[in-house]
Amino acid sequence: MSDTVIAEIQVAPSPPGTPDDPHAFVEAAIRVIQASGLRSEVGALGTTLEGDADAVWATLRAAHEAMVAAGANGGISHVKIASVNRTMDSLTHKFR
Image 1 (spheres, helix red, strand yellow):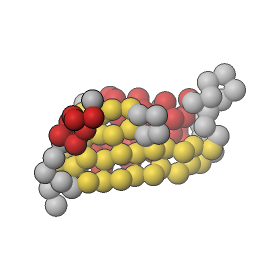
Image 2 (image 1 turned 180 degrees about the vertical axis):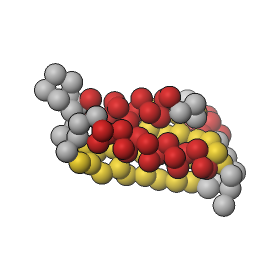
Image 3 (image 1 turned 135 degrees about the horizontal axis):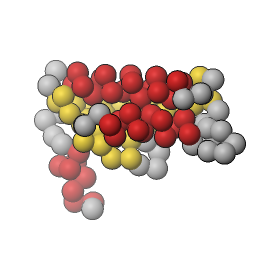
Image 4 (image 1 turned 135 degrees about the vertical axis):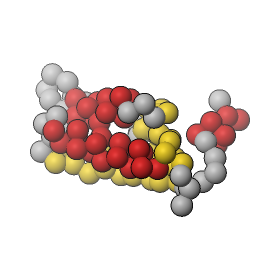
């Protein structure tokens, strides 16, 4: 396995947030990813990150746990992992 991975996570908390902040539990997961120091991009349906495999796996777990700790009754995290010798930019540059 490559030492570097690209991953995408979509958290699906239940409920997604509070009446005052309808995406609060999703945003809790995003904050963990942004604070990780890993390269990341927030998209409409998920967040993509890349970096050292151990750091990425730990961040994915922390994001899922943050969703629940923020107040969700439960939730599902959909995760994709790519062990490739590429970067996020190398896969998307010609479309930007």
